[in-house]
Image (tube, rainbow, N blue to C red; front, side, top):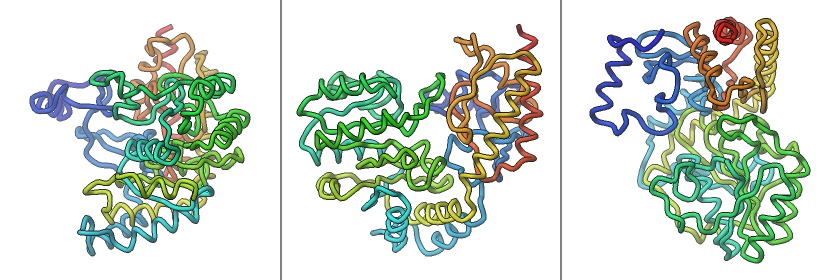
Length: 409
């Protein structure tokens, strides 16, 4: 299934090269992946997707996270069709804005209020801005390697970024209490907040769940300094705990950023906060012409209610455990050494002695040819649409990938 010069995908790539810088931008570019990966897709349904050349895959990326219920979930599509018939982007928000804010406050444990945006970068940037507005301070503590979005203060690329863009960022090491304390000491009385992902999900390295000691110390530092603890729940939100991903740790943030799974593929993000930062949220100016679109809000209500009603997180955990156990068995069968880290519903698979990701690319290309869409270095996502038969199909495809890795040894 290597990219063929006469395939529809290759033809679209050639056309894109003429009118799009680099042919594609951002995280959806396949330039650094195996040539077996398609760049363009035709359709998706449930946990399956089809590329423009008609090849079918079990989807293990879920649109990089947003499709938490599966593509075209009927409850979500019914809600969006109903709202679309009434109106979407109007001169002011629809009633659904208030309904969604009420649902978020009722669902998320730390939340006294909610504000809506369009993507994760909007939400994390709003949180940082609110922290500074609420404290009158500048320093934000950020874990090395953590991803919080794609604007100058946090983008992983330094192209076009100035030193001034990051003048008030201080780094620490995730899950390292001593490192966090040292960063807080460096910030001194200028500490505005700490922003931290729900778990460590840096690209191409083993994932780490946040330790209770680390989460509690972050909370203690912010409380003592009267600063904001910001939980970046953009990636993990609504896949670990509907009440917030640190709720199982017994630690509540002041501000949280959500996106990805909030509206099952419709463009939406949210900041939730406690009353301590309510006034700060009224002082800053953040907005967008499409931020009040009612269709995505209707999708979010249907998504959150469905996740709750069908106990989707428990189902995704069960499917993730089945996948993890199956991959471990295949690795043992073929004498391949690999590591599976992070929550089972957001799996990452990396191979030992594979700094250049050669084994990972071989595995993913083999599985892709057999009908399962894995990623060699980014955490993947399961949805409520994945069933045991789908995971069994994924494991059949994964066996082809394991054989490719074993044969390369």
